[in-house]
Image 1: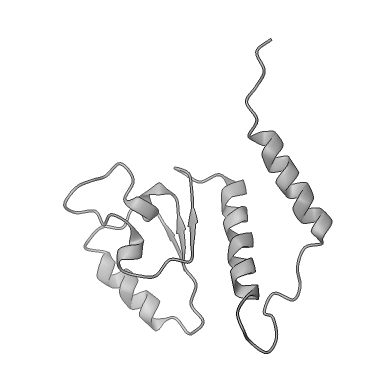
Image 2: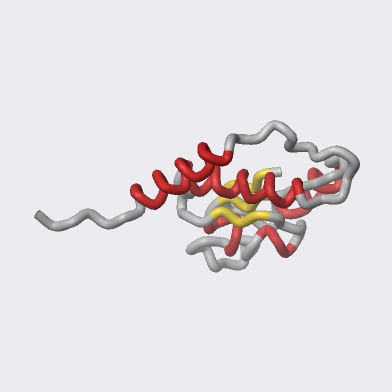
Length: 117
């Protein structure tokens, strides 16, 4: 389950019910600042973090999160799934190690500040 955006207190029971109806194994990604900590909305009607109602496996930073952050969260979730003790690893088909390193290098390049001219 990916929780993206603000969760109001009125929506919280629905999110809990959807989580309860999911088949096992269950994984949750909190996407963005609003889902993780309520964002800038510190009011009586907004839940201050979806982890108060369902267990969150991976938090994605950003408001809104950049595509690289979401992809990185999916890679982290894939690593977490790989550490599970089951007969066959569910993520047997993976990226080649060179592709992962290339992605990390490109993310680092895109996050470097621009040099003044």
